[in-house]
Length: 305
Image 1: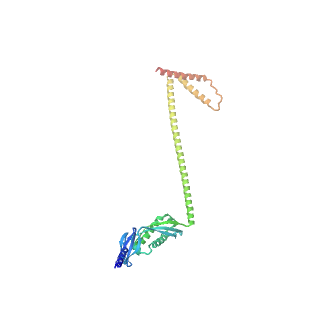
Image 2: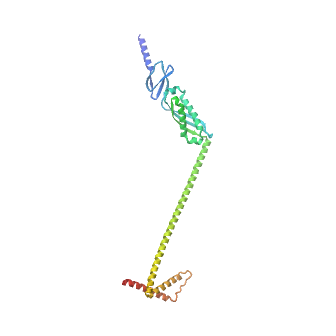
Image 3: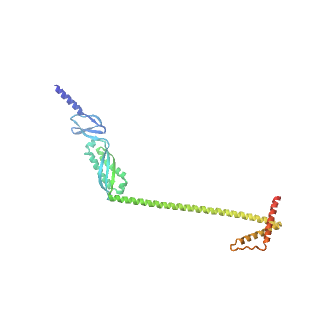
């Protein structure tokens, strides 16, 4: 009897442990009753009916990553390249992921590699190398739509490496070098053009300033000649008034002035080495004396005034 009780207790304890299931965080377990799916256990403590219920699939509900192996792709312009990438996905419905698709990761990889060849094969090599974001977006849309019935959300698809053939890489390097040399020549020509423009602008400003200087000098020369003419006219008027008043010395002044001018021109002649004074030189001196007398009279009047 005691043995029967002990066996019964052990059996009851075993049933209790068989009915208690603990699901770790980040996972969900499907439960099958006699082979048929019944419900999904979430993280934490769960209970099942021993012998009737069994754990079906243990699904990882965290975001996972799959490496897409390298594969060859022929572009639209017949360039053979090698491409690889990564796929990030997350199971949203454990039951669908467990029972709607067989070998879920292999299905995702096959779906991704097929669409990589389709999308990248429809593009030229230059377009393919320069629009990687567009390729990733197109792949994500296609693969995510295809995996949605499986309870899977594809969050990202990234193309890691695009490797063109060696001869094509060398050709691209030469093209890049030629393009850089072209830009260097254009920049140098642009620099020469700017320098020529600046030099021309400087010469223009210099010519303008020089012309303005000549204009200002001519204006001042004209003003000086005008002032001199006014002064000579005033002097002539004063002497004329003196002559009209009967002052003989004024006549001598004019005569002496003309003598002095004539002698000055004669003395400055380059072919004339010997200067002969005219016989009337004494008269000239006398005329100069007349000038002195005129000055005395003028100053004398000023003092008297």
